Image 1 (spheres, rainbow, N blue to C red):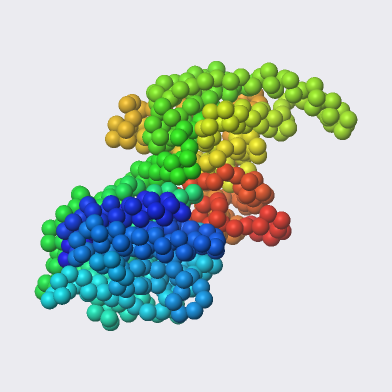
Image 2: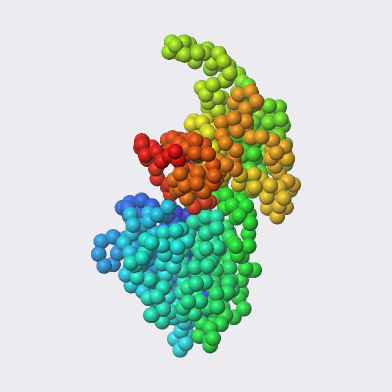
Length: 582
């Protein structure tokens, strides 16, 4: 059987465009017996509450009919095409996450996803009802067909990749039902978002299914960014011995074609017609994170209509890394760097920002905020006196004075955005966002938070990785100035300020964040296992809890870890549960 996996990049709601991607993939594999496309590829994933809008399902069904007609008209009748879309349940009320099998212009089979993930960013119980039947189709010549079993994403993962396997303890195993129905090849269209380390776990799960049941397993995953989620692709085929025999590159569209011979004794595979194997387990985490963030920025801009971005360049490591990712995603000509020196900015900050821009080849402008800052003093001081409060500058800069500088910078960036039509990228990292070391309506201003799921330590590792591998990543030279990497991080909102004036060392802070946010550990456990002082852990976890109101108002952030701030972590703002280490 000649199998083709269409690792495509659908746009949510662009059903006509998504159908064109399927048709184009089919046209480029004329010898394929079976073409498999990702989960919900006709609507894009996740469609969320669009599923509840009147006419959405009708349009999806109409586009399916149009696709079937186009396939029958333009391609050989022998090809079987599997596409994903939401459909009205055929046995009662509700919507199903379905696969439709097309051949010669006709629907020959339907499969409804049986296991519906409802954890982390997934909310499928809100929208779908589960299927209850296995579906196996015959592909290839009638004299010797290949029995192919249909599954969708979670039907194979069963929550094991994300630590939610207990959710399905009482649920029938869709894979076992396919095997009992005679499947010799199991296909698994999916829309599985990227998380560092998850792709390798997926491969292990696929291997286990293949070896336990002595079948070929083929997974085709969506690629591209949709809002906060990035889909990495990494589609693959595993043979009955557990060997990876074909794999698509990560973070780009690709048509993966391979010949299988499931009827051989023992089961065998013919040499694949595919690109060299792409195994995420062989990639450094920094490399995967870079490509995920680049893909996320590129697709967020393309799918929302932005052609250019602008970034406040402070001379610091976070804005430098953001600028590198943006330049790689959109091209240097579509990135504007803006220096915004204020009363406490150092000379080297402007120099480092200008050096970065030159290395990247991005345009760089300087907008001083000193005059705006001084202009705000008289009216604010008048108001402060009326409130019996000290005037600005009455002592060393306090929080009001620091935040005023940040907000003036935000005003400038948003004005430039309005005039130029460019999207503002925020530059704050996960460590800062976790503890609220950021200013609402200031440095948090923007449309996309590129580093909101990247801890400070990972920021430094990514900066080193980019400089060490600049040529293979598409840069003309190491783009980040060495001084930007080595100097102590500072917001430069008061004299001689460094981050560590207000925060613990980042190695300590990041471990507490990982344990409290991603692993959801109690502060007492953090103290016991990490050996940190209880008052420090209580202080940091308290800061994380109190900053929830800021994160609720933050720009959409790209998710690359198991728990990002956003839809996958839903914590009330007005709440009084305060776990303490002491």
